[in-house]
Length: 126
Image 1: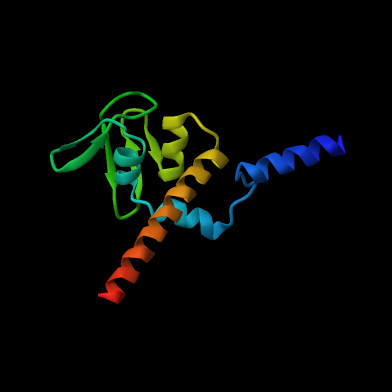
Image 2: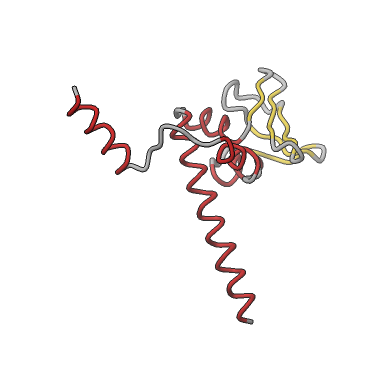
């Protein structure tokens, strides 16, 4: 049994999986990646602008009775009455578990930070 648990631990480390995320990491994942970007760019969910509002095809009920609120970074489906934060949205669209979804968003956030740092370095040199 100890060998099995050790193997699982090594597998998770090699695959970059974490068992837990800190409260700060989760706050960042829920708030720093715009929900519209998660829906449209990251997940390629069908979306449109209707009556001045960003609408998306709900991954649960397949209805367009949806909207997003950039100030809270949440999405809502009014048909099935489900609210989504970025982690919830990844879980619903990709049918993935919480850890996998949070890890995916963490990778996106990490790449975004690297790009911003590179751009800031370029601006400083100019």
